[in-house]
Image (cartoon, rainbow, N blue to C red):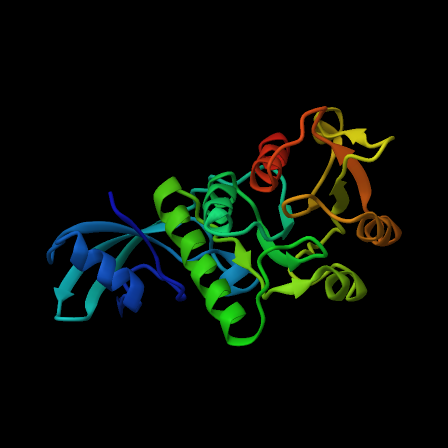
Length: 251
């Protein structure tokens, strides 16, 4: 059954118009009045504490030229989320690799994504261009949730420099009711093995660099901010591969 993200306070028997993005998707699929769909609203992260997560049955009641109306049906408390919250702070890889990273991280159940500009970042974003990119990445995350069955859409937070983010306490977009364990992907000697540590960890804030990794001074600053260096093993992985490998171990 087609699934659509509807960031509204969903309730059984309610009649509502789908947001523009979902409405366009319904029209592209050539669905008709009477067809059944599934709606989800992102859960507490999008609707506030106490909001029901899961998903809702719905039936299309009206198809206009640019609007789609539905009646909300039964609620199902279905969750397909990772067993711990993993917040990813990533030095943005260049070209289309960030799109791919956001999509795959969402499929793996990431809780939030913080895009960062670092010393070695190729991708530099500020102002309106940064805002447009973040909106695009958020839409990529939404589409990935619709496809993979996730009911909690990860928030993609505004782009910051690593220095700004660490100065703010590395908390923007990466907090949880209990302070997450902070991990830094690093090749420095003495880094712990993530594979061995992963089973013992609660919620995690994971910091990973761009192409070429973080610079030595940046790693030092992260360690001073409470991040523990960890390693994926002896191989040097691409920036987007490394982040996803870590998520796979932590999810």
